[in-house]
Length: 140
Image 1 (cartoon, rainbow, N blue to C red):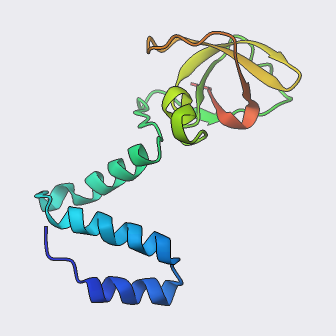
Image 2 (cartoon, rainbow, N blue to C red):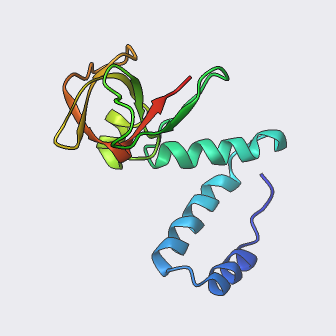
């Protein structure tokens, strides 16, 4: 990697009002980043994928023939429909377990969407209750 200009980085932090702890964390990550040998054409993808998995966001690889939209209450019934948990809905361990998981809606009760996983991932999830805002529904 090219050498990081730490004076420029610190000036950016000051002008943007970045909090001290956030700035210190970024400086530590940049110190490691300087030692990584990444081809120029892979820089942006490397940073994008690192940031997603570091935040426990799933890497949804949506086939071109699929269309997903935000699920919402009311309107058409989604029972029997295919849903997936938004890639960034949960944080921490819950994100690792649930983000990006796909399943079939078995019921809607008291504002909860009840889902049974269909993605062949472990652990198998059954009778999991999600709020509508956590889900996307496959429309095509």
